[in-house]
Image 1 (cartoon, one colour):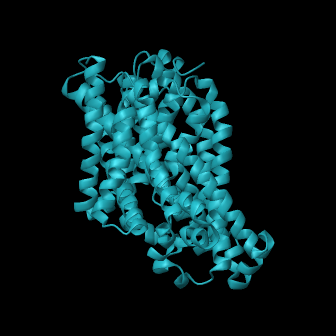
Image 2: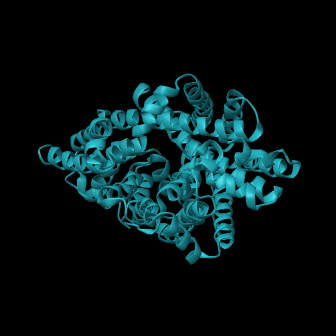
Image 3: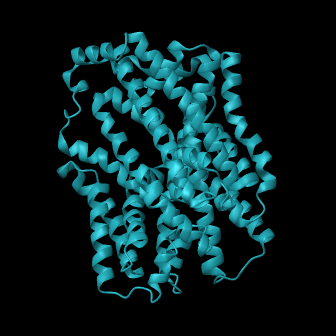
Length: 493
Protein backbone atom coordinates (compact mmCIF):
# COMPACT_ATOMS: atom_id res chain seq x y z
CA UNK A 1 0.00 0.00 0.00
CA UNK A 2 2.84 2.39 0.84
CA UNK A 3 4.12 2.42 -2.77
CA UNK A 4 0.81 3.87 -3.90
CA UNK A 5 1.39 6.83 -1.58
CA UNK A 6 5.12 7.17 -2.19
CA UNK A 7 4.70 10.44 -4.12
CA UNK A 8 3.31 12.17 -0.99
CA UNK A 9 6.95 12.50 0.09
CA UNK A 10 7.16 15.20 -2.58
CA UNK A 11 6.66 18.61 -0.84
CA UNK A 12 4.13 19.82 -3.45
CA UNK A 13 2.04 16.64 -3.22
CA UNK A 14 2.17 16.74 0.57
CA UNK A 15 1.13 20.41 0.65
CA UNK A 16 -1.86 19.71 -1.63
CA UNK A 17 -2.85 16.71 0.51
CA UNK A 18 -2.50 18.77 3.69
CA UNK A 19 -4.62 21.55 2.18
CA UNK A 20 -7.54 19.13 1.66
CA UNK A 21 -7.22 18.06 5.33
CA UNK A 22 -7.12 21.54 6.86
CA UNK A 23 -9.68 23.33 4.65
CA UNK A 24 -12.69 21.91 6.57
CA UNK A 25 -11.46 23.47 9.84
CA UNK A 26 -11.24 26.87 8.14
CA UNK A 27 -14.84 26.39 6.92
CA UNK A 28 -15.87 25.57 10.51
CA UNK A 29 -14.54 28.92 11.71
CA UNK A 30 -16.29 30.75 8.85
CA UNK A 31 -19.76 29.38 9.64
CA UNK A 32 -19.45 29.37 13.45
CA UNK A 33 -21.40 32.64 13.78
CA UNK A 34 -24.32 31.19 11.80
CA UNK A 35 -24.77 28.40 14.35
CA UNK A 36 -26.82 29.98 17.14
CA UNK A 37 -29.52 27.42 17.99
CA UNK A 38 -29.93 23.67 18.36
CA UNK A 39 -31.89 23.65 15.09
CA UNK A 40 -28.94 25.39 13.37
CA UNK A 41 -26.54 22.84 14.84
CA UNK A 42 -28.46 19.72 13.75
CA UNK A 43 -30.39 20.72 10.57
CA UNK A 44 -28.76 23.98 9.49
CA UNK A 45 -31.74 26.04 10.64
CA UNK A 46 -33.68 24.55 7.68
CA UNK A 47 -31.95 27.18 5.55
CA UNK A 48 -29.67 25.19 3.24
CA UNK A 49 -29.78 25.87 -0.51
CA UNK A 50 -30.64 23.31 -3.20
CA UNK A 51 -27.05 22.78 -4.42
CA UNK A 52 -25.66 22.27 -0.92
CA UNK A 53 -28.42 19.78 -0.07
CA UNK A 54 -27.90 17.87 -3.34
CA UNK A 55 -24.11 17.57 -3.15
CA UNK A 56 -24.10 17.03 0.60
CA UNK A 57 -26.58 14.15 0.23
CA UNK A 58 -24.47 12.60 -2.54
CA UNK A 59 -21.18 13.05 -0.67
CA UNK A 60 -22.36 11.84 2.75
CA UNK A 61 -24.03 8.77 1.25
CA UNK A 62 -21.01 7.37 -0.58
CA UNK A 63 -17.84 7.36 1.64
CA UNK A 64 -14.68 5.54 0.53
CA UNK A 65 -16.88 2.75 -0.83
CA UNK A 66 -17.32 4.81 -4.00
CA UNK A 67 -13.68 5.84 -4.55
CA UNK A 68 -12.01 2.59 -3.48
CA UNK A 69 -14.80 0.00 -3.21
CA UNK A 70 -16.74 0.51 -6.46
CA UNK A 71 -13.59 1.03 -8.54
CA UNK A 72 -12.16 -2.14 -6.96
CA UNK A 73 -15.39 -4.01 -7.68
CA UNK A 74 -15.21 -2.98 -11.35
CA UNK A 75 -11.56 -4.08 -11.47
CA UNK A 76 -12.51 -7.47 -10.02
CA UNK A 77 -15.86 -8.15 -11.72
CA UNK A 78 -15.92 -5.94 -14.82
CA UNK A 79 -19.09 -4.21 -16.04
CA UNK A 80 -21.27 -6.20 -13.62
CA UNK A 81 -20.29 -3.54 -11.06
CA UNK A 82 -22.68 -1.16 -12.86
CA UNK A 83 -25.62 -2.87 -11.14
CA UNK A 84 -24.29 -1.82 -7.73
CA UNK A 85 -24.59 1.84 -8.77
CA UNK A 86 -27.95 1.52 -10.59
CA UNK A 87 -29.75 0.53 -7.38
CA UNK A 88 -28.74 3.42 -5.11
CA UNK A 89 -28.84 6.07 -7.88
CA UNK A 90 -32.41 5.16 -8.83
CA UNK A 91 -33.69 4.99 -5.25
CA UNK A 92 -32.03 8.25 -4.19
CA UNK A 93 -33.39 10.02 -7.27
CA UNK A 94 -36.92 9.03 -6.24
CA UNK A 95 -36.54 9.67 -2.53
CA UNK A 96 -35.39 13.28 -2.97
CA UNK A 97 -38.92 14.13 -4.16
CA UNK A 98 -41.27 11.40 -2.95
CA UNK A 99 -39.82 11.07 0.53
CA UNK A 100 -37.87 14.28 1.05
CA UNK A 101 -40.58 16.83 0.26
CA UNK A 102 -43.23 15.26 2.51
CA UNK A 103 -40.75 14.76 5.34
CA UNK A 104 -39.48 18.35 5.08
CA UNK A 105 -42.99 19.85 5.28
CA UNK A 106 -44.04 17.68 8.20
CA UNK A 107 -40.82 18.16 10.18
CA UNK A 108 -41.07 21.96 10.01
CA UNK A 109 -44.73 22.02 11.05
CA UNK A 110 -44.08 19.77 14.07
CA UNK A 111 -40.59 21.13 14.81
CA UNK A 112 -38.88 17.76 14.28
CA UNK A 113 -35.10 17.99 13.89
CA UNK A 114 -34.22 14.28 14.14
CA UNK A 115 -35.62 11.10 12.60
CA UNK A 116 -36.93 9.87 16.00
CA UNK A 117 -38.53 13.33 16.43
CA UNK A 118 -40.44 12.74 13.20
CA UNK A 119 -41.66 9.27 14.17
CA UNK A 120 -42.91 10.43 17.58
CA UNK A 121 -44.75 13.41 16.07
CA UNK A 122 -46.23 11.31 13.26
CA UNK A 123 -47.76 8.80 15.69
CA UNK A 124 -48.45 11.21 18.59
CA UNK A 125 -46.56 8.73 20.76
CA UNK A 126 -46.49 10.02 24.35
CA UNK A 127 -45.09 6.67 25.57
CA UNK A 128 -41.73 7.39 23.82
CA UNK A 129 -41.55 3.75 22.67
CA UNK A 130 -41.06 4.56 18.96
CA UNK A 131 -38.47 7.22 19.75
CA UNK A 132 -36.54 4.78 21.95
CA UNK A 133 -36.55 1.91 19.45
CA UNK A 134 -35.40 3.99 16.48
CA UNK A 135 -32.85 5.85 18.64
CA UNK A 136 -31.27 2.63 19.87
CA UNK A 137 -31.01 1.30 16.30
CA UNK A 138 -29.44 4.56 15.10
CA UNK A 139 -26.92 4.85 17.94
CA UNK A 140 -25.72 1.23 17.73
CA UNK A 141 -25.33 1.04 13.96
CA UNK A 142 -24.13 4.58 13.27
CA UNK A 143 -21.61 4.71 16.14
CA UNK A 144 -20.12 1.52 14.72
CA UNK A 145 -20.18 3.06 11.26
CA UNK A 146 -18.36 6.18 12.51
CA UNK A 147 -15.76 4.00 14.23
CA UNK A 148 -15.21 2.06 11.01
CA UNK A 149 -14.84 5.31 9.02
CA UNK A 150 -12.30 6.56 11.56
CA UNK A 151 -10.40 3.29 11.17
CA UNK A 152 -10.39 3.68 7.38
CA UNK A 153 -9.22 7.28 7.72
CA UNK A 154 -6.48 6.26 10.15
CA UNK A 155 -5.24 3.54 7.77
CA UNK A 156 -5.20 6.00 4.86
CA UNK A 157 -3.22 8.58 6.86
CA UNK A 158 -0.91 5.92 8.29
CA UNK A 159 -0.05 4.61 4.82
CA UNK A 160 0.08 8.05 3.21
CA UNK A 161 2.17 9.85 5.83
CA UNK A 162 4.16 6.97 7.30
CA UNK A 163 2.78 7.51 10.80
CA UNK A 164 1.43 5.04 13.36
CA UNK A 165 -2.18 3.88 13.17
CA UNK A 166 -2.91 5.49 16.55
CA UNK A 167 -1.54 8.88 15.43
CA UNK A 168 -3.51 8.61 12.20
CA UNK A 169 -6.66 7.89 14.22
CA UNK A 170 -6.18 10.94 16.44
CA UNK A 171 -5.63 13.18 13.40
CA UNK A 172 -8.71 11.75 11.65
CA UNK A 173 -10.89 12.41 14.70
CA UNK A 174 -9.57 15.94 15.20
CA UNK A 175 -10.05 16.75 11.50
CA UNK A 176 -13.78 16.12 11.97
CA UNK A 177 -14.56 17.03 15.57
CA UNK A 178 -12.97 20.50 15.48
CA UNK A 179 -15.11 21.91 12.64
CA UNK A 180 -18.21 20.04 13.81
CA UNK A 181 -18.00 21.60 17.28
CA UNK A 182 -17.55 25.00 15.66
CA UNK A 183 -20.22 24.92 12.97
CA UNK A 184 -22.42 21.82 13.41
CA UNK A 185 -24.59 20.84 10.44
CA UNK A 186 -23.76 23.96 8.42
CA UNK A 187 -20.03 23.21 8.59
CA UNK A 188 -20.66 19.54 7.82
CA UNK A 189 -22.88 20.34 4.80
CA UNK A 190 -20.50 22.89 3.28
CA UNK A 191 -17.51 20.61 3.83
CA UNK A 192 -19.41 17.77 2.20
CA UNK A 193 -19.89 20.00 -0.86
CA UNK A 194 -16.15 20.74 -0.96
CA UNK A 195 -15.40 17.02 -0.66
CA UNK A 196 -17.92 16.23 -3.37
CA UNK A 197 -16.05 18.61 -5.67
CA UNK A 198 -12.73 16.90 -4.82
CA UNK A 199 -14.29 13.49 -5.56
CA UNK A 200 -15.75 14.85 -8.82
CA UNK A 201 -12.28 16.02 -9.90
CA UNK A 202 -10.75 12.65 -9.06
CA UNK A 203 -13.49 10.56 -10.64
CA UNK A 204 -13.63 12.52 -13.89
CA UNK A 205 -9.97 13.32 -14.56
CA UNK A 206 -8.47 9.94 -13.55
CA UNK A 207 -10.85 7.70 -15.54
CA UNK A 208 -10.57 10.00 -18.59
CA UNK A 209 -6.77 9.76 -18.54
CA UNK A 210 -6.80 6.01 -17.81
CA UNK A 211 -9.22 5.24 -20.65
CA UNK A 212 -7.19 7.45 -23.01
CA UNK A 213 -4.00 5.57 -22.06
CA UNK A 214 -5.62 2.31 -23.17
CA UNK A 215 -6.85 3.87 -26.42
CA UNK A 216 -10.49 4.71 -25.75
CA UNK A 217 -13.59 2.96 -24.41
CA UNK A 218 -13.72 0.39 -27.24
CA UNK A 219 -10.08 -0.50 -26.65
CA UNK A 220 -10.74 -0.95 -22.92
CA UNK A 221 -13.64 -3.32 -23.63
CA UNK A 222 -11.60 -5.22 -26.21
CA UNK A 223 -8.69 -5.77 -23.80
CA UNK A 224 -11.09 -6.82 -21.05
CA UNK A 225 -12.78 -9.31 -23.38
CA UNK A 226 -9.40 -10.83 -24.20
CA UNK A 227 -8.56 -11.14 -20.50
CA UNK A 228 -11.92 -12.69 -19.61
CA UNK A 229 -15.23 -12.43 -21.55
CA UNK A 230 -17.06 -12.15 -18.20
CA UNK A 231 -15.52 -8.69 -17.68
CA UNK A 232 -17.68 -7.23 -20.46
CA UNK A 233 -20.85 -9.22 -19.78
CA UNK A 234 -23.21 -7.43 -17.33
CA UNK A 235 -25.15 -10.69 -16.78
CA UNK A 236 -22.09 -12.87 -16.19
CA UNK A 237 -22.53 -13.38 -12.45
CA UNK A 238 -26.20 -14.36 -12.52
CA UNK A 239 -29.53 -12.99 -11.31
CA UNK A 240 -28.74 -13.44 -7.60
CA UNK A 241 -25.74 -11.11 -7.76
CA UNK A 242 -27.63 -8.54 -9.85
CA UNK A 243 -30.63 -8.52 -7.47
CA UNK A 244 -28.26 -8.16 -4.53
CA UNK A 245 -26.45 -5.24 -6.17
CA UNK A 246 -29.73 -3.53 -7.05
CA UNK A 247 -30.87 -4.19 -3.49
CA UNK A 248 -28.08 -1.96 -2.17
CA UNK A 249 -30.36 0.95 -3.11
CA UNK A 250 -33.02 -0.23 -0.64
CA UNK A 251 -30.70 0.91 2.13
CA UNK A 252 -30.80 4.59 1.13
CA UNK A 253 -34.28 5.46 2.53
CA UNK A 254 -33.18 4.22 5.95
CA UNK A 255 -29.93 6.18 6.33
CA UNK A 256 -30.56 9.01 8.85
CA UNK A 257 -27.51 11.00 7.70
CA UNK A 258 -29.04 11.18 4.18
CA UNK A 259 -32.63 11.73 5.37
CA UNK A 260 -31.68 14.74 7.51
CA UNK A 261 -30.41 16.53 4.38
CA UNK A 262 -33.97 16.75 3.09
CA UNK A 263 -35.11 18.24 6.41
CA UNK A 264 -32.47 20.98 6.13
CA UNK A 265 -33.45 22.60 2.80
CA UNK A 266 -34.87 26.15 2.88
CA UNK A 267 -37.86 25.31 0.64
CA UNK A 268 -39.26 21.77 0.21
CA UNK A 269 -40.26 22.45 -3.41
CA UNK A 270 -36.61 23.06 -4.29
CA UNK A 271 -35.91 19.40 -3.62
CA UNK A 272 -37.06 18.82 -7.21
CA UNK A 273 -34.06 20.82 -8.42
CA UNK A 274 -31.83 19.09 -5.88
CA UNK A 275 -32.96 15.80 -7.41
CA UNK A 276 -31.63 16.77 -10.83
CA UNK A 277 -28.34 18.08 -9.42
CA UNK A 278 -27.79 15.17 -7.05
CA UNK A 279 -28.72 12.47 -9.58
CA UNK A 280 -26.49 13.96 -12.29
CA UNK A 281 -23.42 13.91 -10.04
CA UNK A 282 -24.32 10.51 -8.59
CA UNK A 283 -24.22 9.14 -12.15
CA UNK A 284 -20.97 10.95 -13.03
CA UNK A 285 -19.22 9.75 -9.87
CA UNK A 286 -20.41 6.16 -10.25
CA UNK A 287 -19.36 5.87 -13.90
CA UNK A 288 -16.05 7.52 -13.04
CA UNK A 289 -15.32 4.93 -10.33
CA UNK A 290 -16.39 2.08 -12.63
CA UNK A 291 -14.17 3.28 -15.49
CA UNK A 292 -11.22 3.61 -13.10
CA UNK A 293 -11.66 -0.09 -12.35
CA UNK A 294 -12.26 -1.18 -15.97
CA UNK A 295 -9.37 0.81 -17.43
CA UNK A 296 -7.26 -0.21 -14.45
CA UNK A 297 -7.78 -3.90 -15.23
CA UNK A 298 -6.82 -3.28 -18.87
CA UNK A 299 -3.65 -1.45 -17.78
CA UNK A 300 -2.80 -3.67 -14.79
CA UNK A 301 -4.12 -7.12 -15.70
CA UNK A 302 -2.87 -8.94 -12.58
CA UNK A 303 -4.03 -7.93 -9.09
CA UNK A 304 -0.63 -9.05 -7.78
CA UNK A 305 0.85 -5.97 -9.48
CA UNK A 306 -1.14 -3.67 -7.17
CA UNK A 307 -0.03 -2.58 -3.68
CA UNK A 308 -1.07 -5.16 -1.07
CA UNK A 309 -2.39 -7.23 -4.01
CA UNK A 310 -5.72 -5.45 -3.41
CA UNK A 311 -8.09 -4.41 -6.21
CA UNK A 312 -9.19 -1.46 -4.04
CA UNK A 313 -5.72 0.06 -4.55
CA UNK A 314 -6.34 0.67 -8.27
CA UNK A 315 -7.40 4.32 -7.70
CA UNK A 316 -4.28 5.44 -5.72
CA UNK A 317 -2.02 3.28 -7.91
CA UNK A 318 -3.19 4.88 -11.19
CA UNK A 319 -3.09 8.35 -9.62
CA UNK A 320 0.58 7.82 -8.76
CA UNK A 321 1.32 6.55 -12.28
CA UNK A 322 -0.35 9.32 -14.26
CA UNK A 323 -0.25 12.61 -12.36
CA UNK A 324 2.19 15.18 -11.10
CA UNK A 325 2.57 16.00 -7.39
CA UNK A 326 -0.11 18.74 -7.16
CA UNK A 327 -3.02 16.81 -8.69
CA UNK A 328 -1.85 13.59 -7.06
CA UNK A 329 -1.93 15.24 -3.62
CA UNK A 330 -5.47 16.51 -4.24
CA UNK A 331 -6.67 13.09 -5.46
CA UNK A 332 -5.21 11.35 -2.41
CA UNK A 333 -6.97 13.95 -0.31
CA UNK A 334 -10.11 12.86 -2.17
CA UNK A 335 -9.86 9.38 -0.62
CA UNK A 336 -9.67 10.88 2.86
CA UNK A 337 -12.43 13.36 1.95
CA UNK A 338 -14.72 10.52 0.90
CA UNK A 339 -14.21 8.82 4.26
CA UNK A 340 -14.77 11.95 6.34
CA UNK A 341 -17.80 13.17 4.37
CA UNK A 342 -19.70 10.14 5.64
CA UNK A 343 -18.18 10.01 9.12
CA UNK A 344 -19.03 13.63 10.00
CA UNK A 345 -22.65 13.26 8.86
CA UNK A 346 -23.11 10.03 10.81
CA UNK A 347 -21.45 11.47 13.91
CA UNK A 348 -23.81 14.46 13.81
CA UNK A 349 -26.85 12.14 13.62
CA UNK A 350 -25.63 10.07 16.59
CA UNK A 351 -25.00 13.25 18.59
CA UNK A 352 -28.45 14.67 17.77
CA UNK A 353 -30.03 11.37 18.81
CA UNK A 354 -28.18 11.38 22.15
CA UNK A 355 -28.88 15.06 22.91
CA UNK A 356 -32.41 15.48 21.56
CA UNK A 357 -33.93 12.02 21.75
CA UNK A 358 -32.32 10.47 24.82
CA UNK A 359 -31.36 13.41 27.02
CA UNK A 360 -34.01 16.04 26.32
CA UNK A 361 -37.03 13.91 25.45
CA UNK A 362 -36.55 10.76 27.57
CA UNK A 363 -34.38 11.72 30.55
CA UNK A 364 -35.71 15.27 30.96
CA UNK A 365 -39.20 14.20 29.71
CA UNK A 366 -39.42 16.92 27.06
CA UNK A 367 -38.50 19.79 29.39
CA UNK A 368 -37.32 22.71 27.27
CA UNK A 369 -33.72 23.93 27.47
CA UNK A 370 -32.73 27.48 26.61
CA UNK A 371 -30.96 27.70 23.24
CA UNK A 372 -27.56 28.59 24.70
CA UNK A 373 -27.56 25.56 26.99
CA UNK A 374 -28.89 23.22 24.27
CA UNK A 375 -26.18 24.39 21.86
CA UNK A 376 -23.45 23.94 24.46
CA UNK A 377 -24.63 20.40 25.29
CA UNK A 378 -24.78 19.60 21.56
CA UNK A 379 -21.18 20.71 21.02
CA UNK A 380 -19.88 18.78 24.03
CA UNK A 381 -21.78 15.69 22.89
CA UNK A 382 -20.18 15.80 19.42
CA UNK A 383 -16.78 15.95 21.10
CA UNK A 384 -17.52 13.06 23.47
CA UNK A 385 -19.19 10.79 20.89
CA UNK A 386 -16.38 11.48 18.41
CA UNK A 387 -13.67 10.33 20.81
CA UNK A 388 -15.83 7.44 22.07
CA UNK A 389 -16.14 6.20 18.48
CA UNK A 390 -12.37 6.56 18.11
CA UNK A 391 -11.74 4.54 21.28
CA UNK A 392 -14.07 1.82 19.99
CA UNK A 393 -12.32 1.92 16.62
CA UNK A 394 -8.93 1.37 18.28
CA UNK A 395 -9.72 -1.02 21.14
CA UNK A 396 -12.86 -2.83 19.96
CA UNK A 397 -12.20 -3.44 16.26
CA UNK A 398 -13.95 -6.82 16.30
CA UNK A 399 -17.16 -5.41 17.81
CA UNK A 400 -17.09 -2.48 15.39
CA UNK A 401 -16.52 -4.79 12.43
CA UNK A 402 -19.37 -7.08 13.52
CA UNK A 403 -21.92 -4.25 13.71
CA UNK A 404 -20.72 -2.59 10.50
CA UNK A 405 -21.41 -5.85 8.64
CA UNK A 406 -25.09 -5.18 9.29
CA UNK A 407 -25.15 -1.37 9.45
CA UNK A 408 -26.24 -0.37 5.92
CA UNK A 409 -28.70 -3.25 5.68
CA UNK A 410 -29.91 -2.94 9.28
CA UNK A 411 -30.68 0.78 8.99
CA UNK A 412 -32.15 0.35 5.51
CA UNK A 413 -34.44 -2.52 6.53
CA UNK A 414 -35.56 -1.09 9.88
CA UNK A 415 -36.05 2.62 9.09
CA UNK A 416 -36.61 2.57 5.30
CA UNK A 417 -39.91 0.65 4.95
CA UNK A 418 -41.41 2.07 8.16
CA UNK A 419 -40.58 5.64 7.12
CA UNK A 420 -42.04 5.18 3.64
CA UNK A 421 -45.28 3.67 4.98
CA UNK A 422 -45.62 6.41 7.60
CA UNK A 423 -45.33 9.05 4.87
CA UNK A 424 -47.94 7.54 2.54
CA UNK A 425 -50.21 5.08 4.38
CA UNK A 426 -52.43 6.71 6.98
CA UNK A 427 -53.30 3.32 8.48
CA UNK A 428 -49.71 2.88 9.72
CA UNK A 429 -49.49 2.67 13.53
CA UNK A 430 -46.70 3.06 16.06
CA UNK A 431 -46.83 -0.64 16.91
CA UNK A 432 -46.59 -1.49 13.22
CA UNK A 433 -43.47 0.70 13.01
CA UNK A 434 -41.93 -0.90 16.11
CA UNK A 435 -42.62 -4.38 14.70
CA UNK A 436 -41.19 -3.44 11.30
CA UNK A 437 -38.01 -2.04 12.82
CA UNK A 438 -37.41 -5.10 14.99
CA UNK A 439 -38.16 -7.56 12.16
CA UNK A 440 -35.95 -5.61 9.72
CA UNK A 441 -33.02 -5.57 12.13
CA UNK A 442 -33.29 -9.24 13.14
CA UNK A 443 -33.78 -10.46 9.55
CA UNK A 444 -30.70 -8.53 8.41
CA UNK A 445 -28.51 -10.16 11.06
CA UNK A 446 -29.92 -13.71 10.73
CA UNK A 447 -29.86 -13.67 6.91
CA UNK A 448 -26.30 -12.31 6.81
CA UNK A 449 -25.02 -14.95 9.26
CA UNK A 450 -26.92 -18.05 8.19
CA UNK A 451 -28.78 -17.68 4.89
CA UNK A 452 -26.80 -15.41 2.58
CA UNK A 453 -24.29 -18.07 1.58
CA UNK A 454 -27.05 -20.63 0.98
CA UNK A 455 -29.34 -18.32 -1.03
CA UNK A 456 -26.76 -16.00 -2.60
CA UNK A 457 -29.14 -13.10 -1.86
CA UNK A 458 -28.03 -9.84 -0.21
CA UNK A 459 -29.62 -9.66 3.25
CA UNK A 460 -31.17 -6.21 2.78
CA UNK A 461 -33.59 -7.46 0.10
CA UNK A 462 -35.48 -10.03 2.25
CA UNK A 463 -35.10 -7.89 5.39
CA UNK A 464 -36.73 -4.89 3.68
CA UNK A 465 -39.60 -7.03 2.38
CA UNK A 466 -40.21 -8.76 5.74
CA UNK A 467 -40.10 -5.43 7.61
CA UNK A 468 -42.62 -3.98 5.16
CA UNK A 469 -44.96 -6.96 5.66
CA UNK A 470 -44.57 -6.86 9.46
CA UNK A 471 -45.37 -3.14 9.57
CA UNK A 472 -48.51 -3.61 7.45
CA UNK A 473 -49.82 -6.66 9.32
CA UNK A 474 -49.34 -5.22 12.82
CA UNK A 475 -50.74 -1.85 11.73
CA UNK A 476 -53.92 -3.54 10.50
CA UNK A 477 -54.64 -4.98 13.96
CA UNK A 478 -53.66 -1.88 15.99
CA UNK A 479 -55.07 1.62 16.21
CA UNK A 480 -53.65 4.60 14.30
CA UNK A 481 -53.54 8.15 15.81
CA UNK A 482 -56.97 9.79 16.11
CA UNK A 483 -56.06 12.91 14.11
CA UNK A 484 -54.31 10.99 11.33
CA UNK A 485 -55.96 13.04 8.54
CA UNK A 486 -54.47 16.22 9.96
CA UNK A 487 -51.06 14.57 10.27
CA UNK A 488 -51.08 13.40 6.66
CA UNK A 489 -52.24 16.82 5.45
CA UNK A 490 -49.14 18.36 7.09
CA UNK A 491 -47.03 16.53 4.51
CA UNK A 492 -48.80 18.05 1.52
CA UNK A 493 -48.04 21.32 -0.25
